[in-house]
Structures are given as C-alpha cells and as structure tokens.
Image (cartoon, rainbow, N blue to C red; front, side):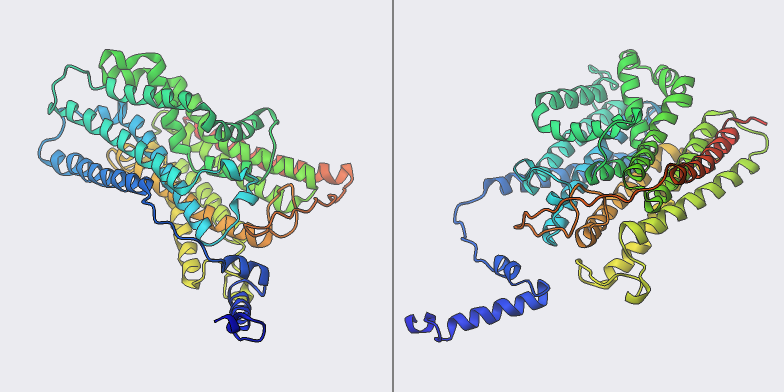
Length: 492
C-alpha cells in the first residue's frame, strides 16, 4: 500500500483521473470545485434527536390533517353545523393562518431544492451565513405552526357543532390563536428581526424610500401572490380590534368588517394593490439607477396592468349589483387575459431565461437536469397564472354558491405553490446568468467561493430621453388605471 500511494505508484494518478472526470462531467472542467465536492466527510455515530423530534411532529401533522379533513368533509355531510355564517365571519381568519403555515412549508421546500442543486441563494440574497436557518429549523417551525393552527381549528369546529361544551364561546378560539401568534412574535423578536427589516424595506417604498436589491425584489414579488392572504389578515385585525368577537355574533362581526363599506371599498383596495405598487416603484427606481428602459420600464408596465385588474376587481365587488353586468364582465376578462399573458411570458423569458429557440425552447445550461421538468413547469405556470385570475373574480358576477369562502383557499394555496416553484427557477436563472440587480456583478460563485466584483458604472442618458420614456409609461399606466377605476365604480 505504501508503494501505491507514492508518486508513480498508481493510486494518486487514479485519484487525479477521477477528479478530472468528475470536473468534466459535473463541474464544467472546474477542478477546484470537483475536489471540494469529492472531499470525504467524517461520519458521526451519535443519534440526532432533532431529526427524531421533527419526525414525530411531522407524524402529528399528518394525523391532524386526516382528522381535519374527516371532520370538515365527511362528518359535515351527515351532520352539518347549525348555520353557515361562520364561513363568512371566522373562517377567513383560519384561511389566513393556513396560508401562512403553507408558506413556511414552501420556504423549507425551496431551501431544500436550492441546497440540493447547489444554487448559492445565500450569496444571491446577500444574507449572513451565520443567521440563515437550517432545513431542520425551518421544517421544525412549520410543524409547530401546523399543529397549533390545526388543533385550534378542530376545537373551534367541534365547539361550533356542539361536540364540546360551550363553556368557551367559539369566536374566542380564533382570537386565542391570533393573540398566541402575536405573543410568539414578540417573544422571538430577535429571530424575526431579519424578516421584519426586509419587509420594512419593501413597505417603505410607499413614500419612495427603501433599498432595491434582489432580496427585496424577490420578497415584493412574493407579496404580489398574497393578495387574498393580505385581505384575510386585514380582516383578522379588524375583527380583533373592533371587539366583535366578544359578543359571539357572526352577524355583528360581518357588519363591522366583512360588510363594512370602509373595509370593502378602501382597506381591500389598498392591501390588494399596494404589493403591485411596490414592485412598480422598485422597477422605476432601478430604471433611474441604470437608465435602461428594458427590462425595468417594461416590467413596471406589467405591474401597472395587474394593478388595473386588481382595482377593477375589488371596486367592482364593493359596488352594487348592476342590471347589465355584461360590459363589466367583458372588460374584466379582457384585462385579466392581458395581465395574465403579460406576466406569464415575462416569467418564462425573463425571470427563468427560457424560451430560447436554439435550445428547444429552454436554455443552454439546466441545473435541474431533465428537460421534461422545465416543460412541465412552463405548463404548470400557465395554469397557475389563470388560477390566480379566478381568485380576483368579482363576487357579484360569480355563479358558484359560496365560491369565495370554499374555493378561494385552495386557489390561494395554488398561487403560493406556483410562486414557490417560480422562486426555485428564478434563483436558478440568477445563479447561472446574474440577470438581477445585486450590488455585485459578475458570475455567482459556488458555496465555497466568496469572490465579489464591483459594480460597473451605469449608462448615462440625457434628461430629455429619460423624460420621454417616463412620460410614455406614466401616460399608458394612468390611462389603464383610470379606466379600471371608472368601470369598477360605475353603476350605470
């Protein structure tokens, strides 16, 4: 053996040959990366109790899921609750929490995909590696939140149906859930500080402040997929602070929040359009920084069209039923088709970098391996985009009974899943081509490489050129939004 490891003995040459083969097949002839990936890792013999705890909590989540489905579907068919007012008064609160729990699970899934395919999301997002949560921590929080929300919902539903004694009024249970979550956030303020700072950078765009980088743009894009979730969260705080839950009256809760004119006409309009406005402002700020009308002004127009759809939908739903809804329905379908196709084409061509004719409708380098994966997600993204359109359908024109209350949660969940899928491929494209607007230019390094390059000087334009490009976008955007508001509030 000692002669084999000596120079010329054969073993070292075999190791070098294996490294070169691995580099050629999997690392683009990068021998340093191949050596790093082939390093042997010391095995541990100690039992990892964290995985055991995660496993039994995941099992508890599965049991609660089946229990919830049985009680809410099978039992309800034979013994429904005495009234269905709770669907309009308290169910939106649980709908919001189930969406938040789903987002935790999706965040863990995205982190798993990025780590498995070696997408350097820590560098792309410019995160501190010491503060990035591990997969165990993310899924641990997801399982804890799932157990808490499902247990609370089951208790509420059983009290509502009379399976449990009424010593605690049913509306108190969702408020206990809300107060518990607020208390947890305050107790874990340090761990929530990073997320809060990023969200603040996005929200501060309301007064044209805030920093625009890849992370804040990614978070703002996620915000645009949370339209129904924002409405439900606003409704939750409305119920909490108006105190209607103290009176155990579903009708009072609806009159103070769900059917309140100010909430429907103002609050819902703001929470559904502001995320789109944030992305619009981000693109305008990036245009001012780089003076490039494409892609930033073109992307800004995409959000202007989406804002027009959202404004029309919410204002139309808040107005009275019209004698002849056909013109408004035609207007809605036209604008939603334009917005959906616009966003879908942008997803495929710009955010994912696909649709290249020379590469079979994809691109040259694919980090996720099989080509069928990319063709599948292209189709799924189209379906998901049109599902999102259905979640914005005006209530007055909806022929399906209880559609907004029963079907919307599933459509909102589909949109969140679509956004998570979008995030996986968006980061892949950014890792390969650096198409975003981070502070550091050049190729994205691998996990063990920390090299960064400085940003080049932006292109300079005259004031007249900038004024022409901005006036064109403002004119078209203002016309679209003005038309949508007119048709939304018109009662003729």
